[in-house]
Amino acid sequence: MEVVDLGPEDADELAALFGDHDWWTDRTPAEVHAALAGTDIALGIRDDGTLVAAARVLADGTFYGTVYDVIVAEDRRGEGVGRRLMEAVVDCDGLTELEVLDLRCREGLVPFYERVGFETHDPTVEVDGREEGFVTMNYVGE
Image 1: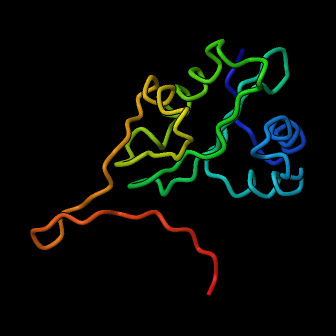
Image 2: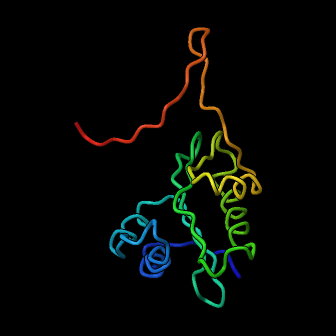
């Protein structure tokens, strides 16, 4: 197994990997191509040339980075492929100096991400002497 950089030329293979996961079956190769073209860091794991895992990161290079689309081929889960991928992600040039590297995941994946160094956090901040919570919001239009 080897860690590789991914780019738009890997879109068909990554789209096929996404297609094996119910969450992402609607992603087309064209959409994955565009996403990879706009991604700061995209890493994959290849085994005998076959893409078996991938992750993307969007980062500003100084303060913040967010990990997206972590996926491991279903038949390769439990073999340490995901751990190897996430170790490569967090050690990637440009990410080790960030103040925050975060991700969102399903509750069932929290133990995995904790084992590779992530932790849940209470999204609060002190403002004018009082604590306020942060809320995640998605834009849906007006």
